Structure formats: structure tokens, C-alpha cells
Image 1 (tube, rainbow, N blue to C red):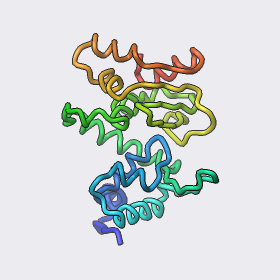
Image 2: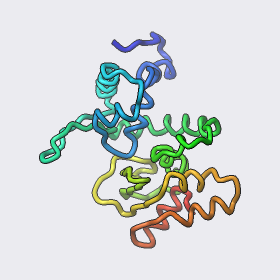
Image 3: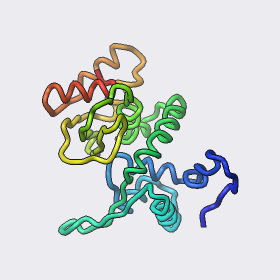
Image 4: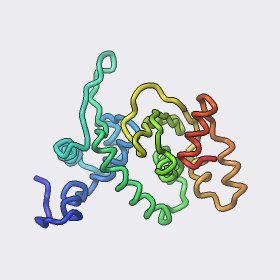
Length: 211
């Protein structure tokens, strides 16, 4: 049974759902696409298999994560964020990532596709600039694919084919956001590759501050 603070305040109630160890890291892994149980285990070294199963069940019960079966020939179980998960979890993930960004150690193990997505895409999302946009996007970072939509001024579940696909390395996305000099950031931005019509690419770059 999940633990509870037994306090009727919004912070305590939120922590009852999100405050258990590993929970936010599981949700972090589900940003941008479905993941198999084995994918989650590999991305979260140190988590016991029974604990991962417990956390996933708790997140399903809270309506933040859904489980689905892919049809043959794939025929596998995958986990993904629900629409409610995108609405409720993304602001929390963004706030914590913003807080932790300055604490990130500049070591080789920090240059991962997920960190590239967090630093280069998620933290660059400009909510006011997203007004009126309803589009699905794809970001391919060092071979890992992140799919998401911009809808109702926020990020959400992808629907349909992507209007824009961006291909980049984690190193370039992190440098584009955190490079120590303007020339470094500009050079990294210049190496990002975009597939889509010009207006859609311009909108994408503006919404995620990648210009």
C-alpha cells in the first residue's frame, strides 16, 4: 500500500501520489512516448522489479499512466502517459528539471537522449507562444524518438503524423541551451535538422526557443 501523509493540503495530497521514491523518474521516462517494462528497468538501474510493478500500478490507479497491448507482430505491453498525466505531471517535471539543471554535473554520462530532450526541448517550451497551435511533433535524439503534441497551450498526447521532425544529438541540444558562449550555442543550433514545411518548422522553433 502506498504511504500517505494524512494531511488535507494540496502539497501533501500531491506528494501522496508523486512523492514515493522512483515515481517521478518513472514518469520522466514516459515523457514523449510509450515504454516497455524492460525499457523502464534498463533506464532505472537499482529499482527492484517488484517495486517498479508497484509504482506502475499506483500510477495507473491515479490515472496518470496507461497500459496497452501493441498488436502482432510486435505483441508487447507498453506504458505511456495519459492525457491527464501530460496535464498534471509535465509542469512538475519541468519545475524540478529547471531547479536541477544548475546542479547537473558536466560529465559524459549527462549527455543522454533524455537529458537532451529535457534541456533542449522541454525546458525551452514557451507556453504563451503555443497559443492556437494543434500539432504533433517528433524529436529524434541519438536514435531515441520522442513524440508529443502541442495543444491548448501545453504539451499532450501525440495524435496523427508529426508536422515537424527534428533530428539532433543530445550534445547539440544541451549545448544549444547551456553553451557557455553565444557562438557555441549558435553553432549547436545550426546543426539541428528539421523535416517539415517551412511555416511549421518556424512555429516549432519559435515555440521551443530553438532559433
